[in-house]
Image 1 (cartoon, rainbow, N blue to C red):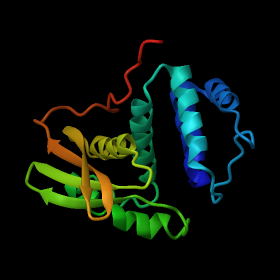
Image 2 (cartoon, helix red, strand yellow; image 1 turned 120 degrees about the horizontal axis):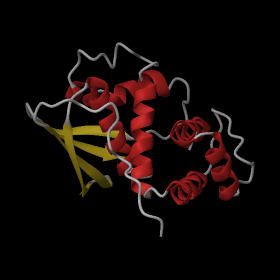
Image 3 (cartoon, rainbow, N blue to C red; image 1 turned 90 degrees about the vertical axis):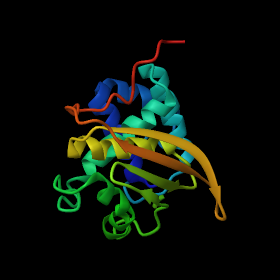
Length: 198
């Protein structure tokens, strides 16, 4: 996993809880390099899982909610890369159908050896869309968070569900998105409710 993702995760923790918790999470994760990531470096995915585990323990949030919240955070930060691509005038489904194009235009040119997920449209209607999320790491909660981040940006309400699926290439996650009844869209999605300490 690219170091830029780790650095963005650190930013996410800082935004949510401040510098002190970030320091506690890094120490608790016992990383071999003390959390000194370079943006273009490649690091074991297990280090991200260790950071997430430490963060869930410190924040009393579930792992799934942490990944979902991080996905939302990442999408809202992507807006600065290519603002015209994410124009509020565009339809949510149009943006989701072109996430792969964004990866190739903006991400691949900066990190040519990055392992990027793909989103494939399986069906699309006026109010419903089904997307196939293909990734070696299968971070479905992160993908759902990205979709919620897009909905927040566009100020539309959505309902999202996931299910396991498989095709000739192997297992993947099928994501169903439904446009909800018109309503005021919250500034942030309630993706990470606080979980009671164990």
